[in-house]
Amino acid sequence: METTSGWSRYAAFIGLDVHKETIAVALALPGRDEPQYRGEIKHEPKALKRWLERLNDEFGGTLLLFCYEAGPCGYGLYRQLTEAGHNCQVVAPSLIPKKPGERIKTDRRDALKLARLLRAGDLTAVWVPGTEQEAMRDLTRARDDMKSQEGKARQQLNAFVLRHGHHWPRGKTRWTETHFNWLESIRFEQPWLQIVLQEYIDAVKAATQRVADLTDQLLRALPGWSLAPVVDALVALRGIDKLAATVLLAELGDISRFDSPKQLMAYLGLVPSEHSTGARRRQGAITLTGNGHARRMLVECAWSYRFPAHQTMHLKRKAKDASEAAKAIAWRAQKRLCDRYRQLSQAGKNIKLVCVAIARELVGFIWDIVRHEMPRVQIAPAGR
Image (cartoon, rainbow, N blue to C red; front, side):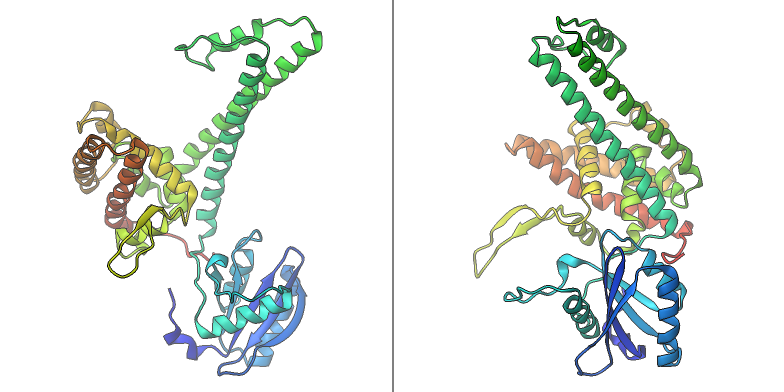
């Protein structure tokens, strides 16, 4: 991450308040003068290109630093600015300093504020994925969305059937061929209720098929991904299969950019919140900041450590493509985390809290494996 020590090489600091159709522009020159508002431009590649040409003429082609808030418009603007030879920061909106008395918000004010804070070095930039990384992340998130839709469709079908006095026997597996045959055998007096039931059943089957299609597409895309070797290394860990490893790496990218496991744990929101003063120290629930997709996947993976450590044939088979270093780290992780789970659960801790604690420690072993594997992997720059 660039620091303010290199700010002297920039001829201007430009804050952009980005919207779907327009971009409000403010420019701050080096020094202490107030930023200048430069109006709005269309949020279109051609309009942006013409505007950049005018800026290059104004500043003699010197290096400029741009910034805008991370949001729904994505990273297309970032890539166009960096391809034009300038530097750009996509900043975290939640970490932008805000005065308690600020009650007026306009595009003009937002752009001026961004330019002023950028020049002062008070903004926090987020990590920008490359196009390949972003595509894989979109694929994993699309599968996650379809999985949520599948769960909702199943819940709606179960609720409808139960509301009309039918329920599947406890202890039997749902969503099998036998279960669907039972659902389709239900009969109602009113013919339109039969139509409603069939529509609910079809919705569940369609959602399940979409999940299966996206899962298949993800696994077929995986061998061509630049981080595929790291995925093979991570599956050596107990509880992490190719799908989980792909989700984690798609969301987090190059994990080795974190200097320590503690930084990664904090980034994922798995560290306790704290409100301490003087001699009193008070810790609360985890912060839940950062990437929720990766955090949820880690907690799901952590449940597998509730059983004793053991080198099963299943673990050996799924780790066949992992390096020896990754296998050694995975075995250390299994011994440590299984023992840790047993200690915490025997101490009377809530099982859900225990799994969160295991997930936090699992992050450290993931970081260690990635640190060993990343030197062998080439990742495309974010701006390309």
